[in-house]
Image (cartoon, rainbow, N blue to C red; front, side, top):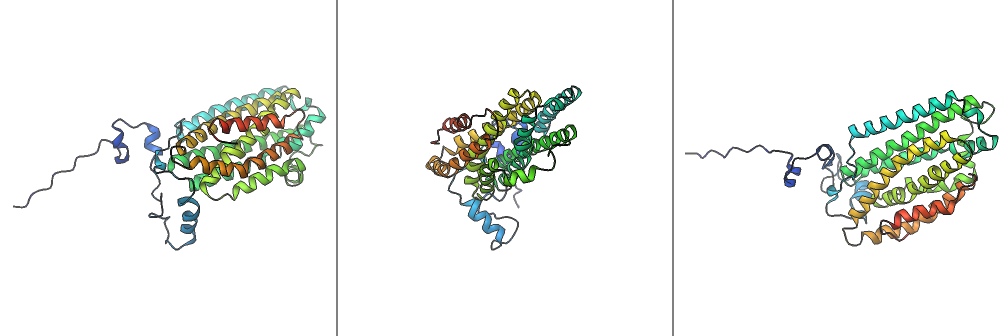
Length: 328
């Protein structure tokens, strides 16, 4: 008589979450272990000898930044698509109300000529800077070592798009209030040829071709993004307040909330990588290449912002990294 196989017991949760011995939350269900091509044994959906596999192998699978369980990383804020949209809907509602209130007061028409020049030279060309931040974070989305890391880069890229969109919107408003100025027409020329922008252009263009996923994270999240936050957001907001442009300062403060969230997950990833021997040395070696570029970029941009303190901005960026146990 043939023995009948014992019927399979249905799992109470997803197999990769069963070991937790507790009910998974929304973040774990929709964010974890989503990548099937985690290593060289499971290449992208193409033959192993194709270029795309060689790219993954060279820049993703064998990065000097290593970990035995990349899927173990967790976003400290546990952001998912649903909660991200709720948060940013509230942020944008707040900013839209600000803009409406200041427009009713004809705020833009009261800005001084000197400050309008700063806006022309620094703020409105900043949409090109925001675009590089968005593209660079997009690379992290495409080549992240795990789905939880890639998701963090996804929301970071969306944050940069939000910044870009708001700058573009304000550019159009400033053009409407000051049609005799260069708003909406001079920004590309300023970005490409303005001496104060060339440091950030070099920094961001190099970060876009930092293909190794570990170095890319270091270049973008530990160096370039803190430099942008401290110079283009914090120092600029301070200058805006001194120029009686409270609208620009308040809008910028809103974007700083996105930056704080980015800083939290970057900090968590560095701590996560620190569990593996040698990783901190790898990160510090990369910092030696990238930090001088960022500090030069901050000094250049701050030269065009009245009262801005490049030294203080660079000091805060260094403090952020030192708080992670890093050398620079």
